Image (cartoon, rainbow, N blue to C red; front, side):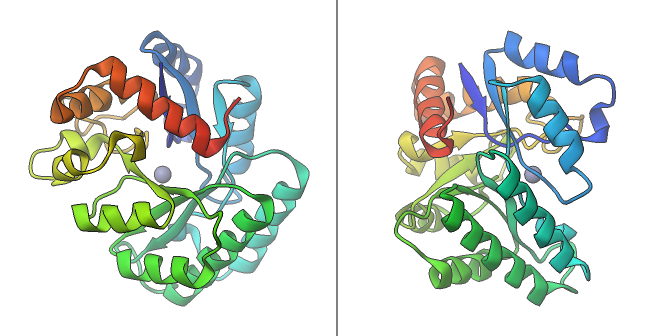
Length: 255
Ligand SMILES: [Zn+2]
């Protein structure tokens, strides 16, 4: 059994096919799928899927850094509204992205800080997106730090030393399709980090693992990622599945 800890399979990319996508995931042993939100426009699609697949799909709530624009205050209000209304399993996906656009950098920092405070208030883990922003993200985490803070650096792309630092702050390392790409450097991180601190993810529809690179990704492909982690660590696929699933269940407090 595997848990895909980051998958946007509710998105329009899967229009009309999502039942098949989930069927294929279950056939591959991917029995739990975490759904990170993007912004107010994605919530309905995400919750519709979560409610159709209770016990399989688990929703998060948050504003993706690339969705932080002029209307960030209204977007934050939407997040607060939903948190008060129903159960979510994490604040996500949130963070800082300075790769696509730096226009709203200050707003991104404010919105990320505010969402860490919401994670504290609701005692939820945080799913963090880091793109060309490692220093900024870790500075904000230090500023907002509280002892029970926990979460994941999703699709981790840093160094082994940065991974140690991330783990020391209470976070797990999210390993996705990039681990199967040549020269990504993620294999070094996987080798270095204790398996207990790793969780697996597809980031569907993005980042399809080899040999499917460039195609639309889906949760069933998590097996390619698990297989690669087993190969790097020289252990069995079962061991990878068991340990990463247990870590994910504890982190997100899954039933
Ligand atoms: Zn994502």
